[in-house]
Image (cartoon, rainbow, N blue to C red; front, side):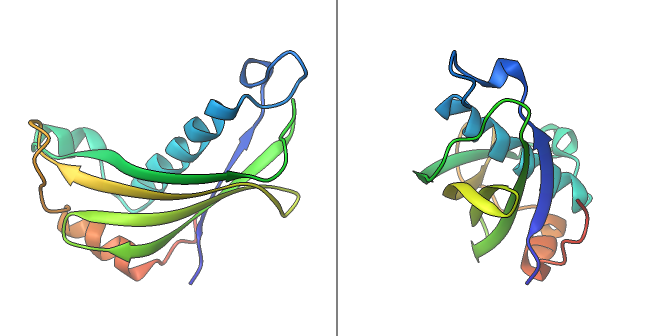
Length: 136
């Protein structure tokens, strides 16, 4: 199965005084990649919220393997590992020149505006199940 691929450049604001990406910014990078994946599947998150559905990360495991630095071009690969009616588990890898720098397994739940579990949008569930990602 082909992972969803999204690219980002490291800017000065993403780094610490040594020019190395500050650890919390990897979470921002993978969050953006998840949002782009959902968008590429044709799902409008503003519409979902208006319908009473939002996403929340409920679990995250992360491994830092090597630092990214100022001006690096990073590729974030996202692949679905598990899918249920109310949540999905993703593997997300941040790479530079094909080498993994940061690896995360992220569980995302769908919930209503009062934080109660809610079924995933059928279009999103079908898109995630198909894993037909080709857009970058």
